[in-house]
Amino acid sequence: MSTVALWYTARATGVVSLVLLTIVVALGIASRSGRSAFGLPRFAVALVHRNAALLAVITLVIHITTLLLDSYAKVHVTDLLVPFVGSYRPFWQGLGTVGLELILALVVTGLLRTRMPERLWRGVHWLAYVCWPVAFAHGLGNGTDSGAGWMRAIAGCSALVVVAAVGWRLAPHFTEHSKVRRPLTRASAPALGRTR
Image (tube, rainbow, N blue to C red; front, side, top):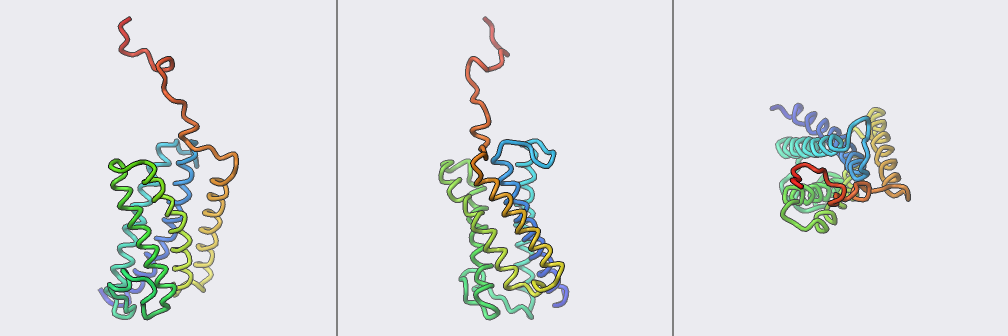
């Protein structure tokens, strides 16, 4: 693949990753509410949330791989492991490294969710609230398209979606699905299989 193709692929997948992370955060909050969202039932919201997260990780892997292969970008493996040591805009590139490490923590704990205590998983999952602004700042500070009108529009819409979702999550009337669902008691259980 030519350097130009690598460069355009890296830029495009960076933008797509930001959009997908925005969707993941908004749908993650929506799935916690226990209500349907966007005309979808709760289980579908959770499914779209998971699939968007998977797509975000895939586009992020492509973003990083193309930057590593592109001789013009001059990104090294060390830049992916150690934040703020890159040669090009080290602070903004370092935020990308921090965002990557946060996403890795979310992916690993997501894969191990059934094998770890719910409280620990939930505590680590709160890192998503840190990951999004870090990725957002990385994209605006390090992205070569950050000054373009279309990129500002995407960034502005993404910020509005996340701020609205977080505002809803922090609102006093927000109810988590664990509190919305009624526990299944013996009295409310269906009578299937009863022989008496």
